[in-house]
Amino acid sequence: MNDVCVKGRLDGLEIAFAFADTTEVVNKLVLIHDCDPVAAHLFGRCITASVLRASLLPDGQRLNINWQYPGELKAIVIDAGHDASLRGIISPSYLHNIAQSQDEIFGDIGEIKTVVMDKGKVLRSSVTPVSLHDPVNDFAYHFSISDQIETSIKALIGFTPDEKNPVALSNGIMIQALPNCDLNIFENIRKKMEKDSFANLLKVKDGKNILEDVIDELIRDENDYHSCIIGSKISPKFICNCSSEEKFSIVLKSISIPERMEIVKENNPLKINCEFCKKTHEVTVKECIKYWNN
Image 1 (cartoon, rainbow, N blue to C red):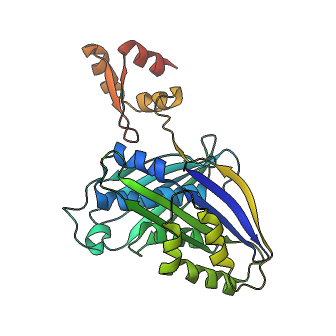
Image 2: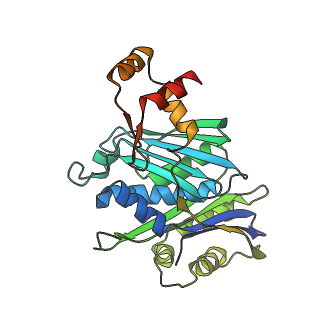
Image 3: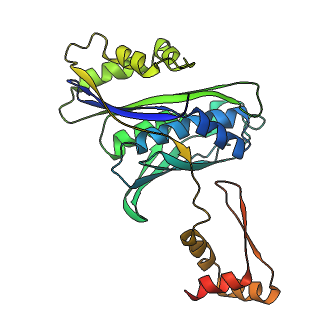
């Protein structure tokens, strides 16, 4: 089954939702960053949560999320677009041997920073202190506080012994209260998402229609429910734009004048490493000068 993100609305309950299967793109990113199982578990679920939230943005907008913690896990950064294109990093990518508990992984109080952009222009940004010791729950809490929109996210990830395809499944669902939503009903549905039986629905693969079963569980015994309105479907995909002219220009122009003079004097190609895709780009001195002069 290919990765997919589906947006919709529970009519009558006034709840928006997004469901995503991100198995392939999470597998790719876990391999790129050579994550151990602990880091892969955290990173993969954050990727899914980011796809879910970004999918609800207006066309063309992107969401940058930066999780920062004072524990052994220092940061997770994900850049995701309305079209479900994304890239991300986790630091460090090995946690199993340096952290043996949640407290050691996350430390005390962390912080989530989000920036919404449109064509390179910052539309809005927000920062929220977080301390739930789970990056997905911290993320949902952040939006409930920063956007004043009741939000709940459930994201699961499972693994296999296959080193080339370590991620067996990665999916999740997000719900948000729309105007006129009864918050007592929203809370009832949030509690359903916390149950083990609900998690078991998300673990099913092999082509079964997970979304249908998930929605059936969410609306069970909700008398105000009318129908499930399915919106657009998009395919989550890893895309890194580190090779773009704009990115090269930003990086090269950040080099100080003394450093530029040293680069020209040595006349050796400049190597630029991308932390998102792990590619190394070589830029000749002639190309550097072209960027510096523009």
